[in-house]
Amino acid sequence: MDEQEVEARKGAVYGFLAYLLWGTFPLYFHALIPAGAWEILTHRILWTALLCVLVLALTRRLRSLGRLLRDPRRLGLLCAASFFIATNWVLYVLAVISGRTTEAALGYFLNPLVTVALGVVVLHEGLRRLQWVAVGIGAVACAYLAIAYGRPPWISLALAGSFATYGLIKKRVGGSMTALQSLSAETLVLSPVAAAILVVLTLRGETTFTGHGGWHTALLVLSGVATAIPLLLFAAAARRVPLVTIGLLQFITPILQLLAGVLLLGEQMSTARWVGFGIVWLALVVLTVDSLRAARRTRRAARLAAAPV
Image (cartoon, rainbow, N blue to C red):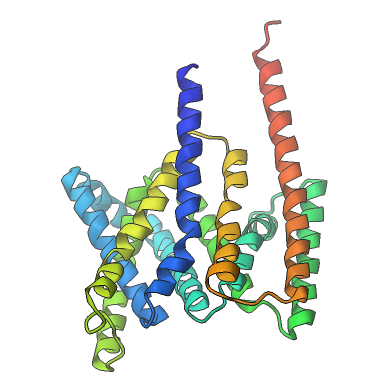
């Protein structure tokens, strides 16, 4: 086995672990009850920022973060990215602690379809035929769920939209930042707002950091570690495996979220909701088939280009 294959296997393991950890987040955030969504968000931001700054300081890379924050263009993009990831985080936690984990799972199933749609609307990218079919099926799923529920699946759409927009902005930032630098910058930008929200919650007597046992306090503190580790694992995977592999691995998270909601948290799934999920899964199958075919064509073209003439 050559070095490239070893690295690819490592990348697949890192990616699997990242999505596995993200898939367990419903159980983690459910364990933080009676903390509310805003309190959990503030702790997640502040402890993650502290952890990232400590790691950068220990590795003597803190100056590079300072240079990034002094770049007006990148700082503006990071502020926008921070807004959308914070929106995603608070909506996700709100969904979990209010017993709507399955709706959150639907949002992450919809995310690849929303990402493709954003590519068309914002970046004016052209879609292949099967990509159009997948987006169309996804739209049918949303329409069906809106009729079945009597309302659009707002939480699912907001989660998918906020995360897809976050990814779009990060694409504009480019690959000049490591995952650690990016997470550090985003949480530092959010920290003053998070601290202000935490002060308000404390003055109103709506915090649970103390008074609910040491385990509860420890879980809130460790939310920073829980945020950073899967992201760094994902970054390590993305450098080693093809995008198609990442695309396939990403379905681990919403599948685990759905199972956690139904099997462990006792959420009910009506027949109509299962049908809606089934339509979304059909769209994802079409999108996955298209991705695999496109990757196969790319590999074939690369082999032909490398072949001796």
